Length: 228
Image (cartoon, rainbow, N blue to C red; front, top):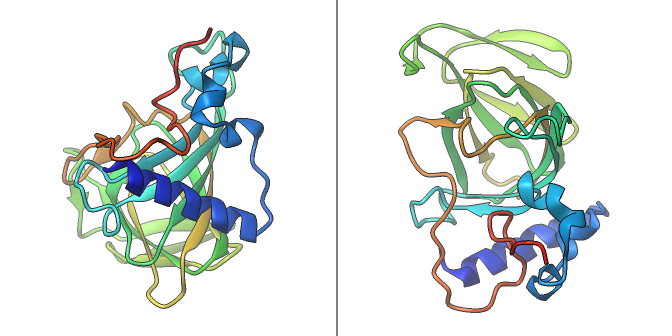
């Protein structure tokens, strides 16, 4: 992705968050210059990849296949003694026309909550023993405490205020229902490990390569400098 695309995506997500009067932690507002002055008191932010995360999944078509995210809190699997939180929380922004590809998590269970905006469509499939899509068996989903069974490949709509529980190895993708506008989602989950706990189908990358065509507006969670 070009840095200018990343900067534009950051500002667009910030705008929706501001419109809905949601407040973010201080570290989400740090400039690249601010990060140069931060010491070890922010090691939890660095080590657990808290903060901004913009991805085009390595495909170079962010407006079609992409997602904007903020990790607000997270524990650590590798440093569990130091960061023992068993949970994570994110905000996710998906604009109309964007798609977040089919994937599952081997370990993480999560609730996806439509916090504001349009209607998000979440397509669901069970997975087979070989980790491929099960295109035959019906899927039991849990929507705000209500269990319901839907055919494989159903797009489950979530209107603002609704949520779905995504169990490990349950395939899911995201897109916005046409005509309803961008969506701001919440995610409440077990510890998040994006480097090791995403099984994309078909396989693809998670973090983008960046072409520097202008200075960064904010640093992404993978870009923080070492503590002074």
